Length: 130
Ligand code: C2G
Image 1: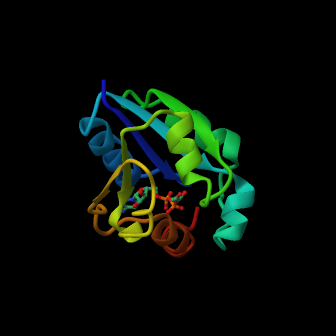
Image 2: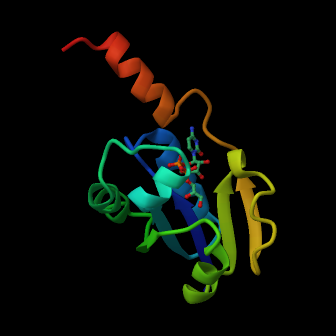
């Protein structure tokens, strides 16, 4: 059984998030997802709208996701890979070559165009008034 691992914040969960998780699952049989803690987001210079518990609840509910844990640090990536016995790390290509140092295979998948949490944050206030 091939075990795939991927990571993300998954704030304001959108179609780009769903598609990368579904494509990650297609790379193997079992999908493990590390959801970034609020503290890790602070370090990444991001502030999530939805708290960690809610982001985890949404990701956990997806058919393609088998297991979820909290990602506390980007540098711990290889420890998570070993702990969850992952054979393949999947990331979006905004992270291209950033994680080539890990001990399993790595695949960077193309991001879904024209959608992002940043775009949503900016457009909601401007376009939807009530
Ligand atoms: N994504 C995508 N298409 C989009 C937007 C996002 O394929 N239009 C992918 C990203 O490439 C990433 C995943 O969805 O693989 C989660 O994206 P984010 O929630 O923005 O995750 P990020 O904050 O980049 O955290 O250890 C790495 C980090 O935790 C990744």
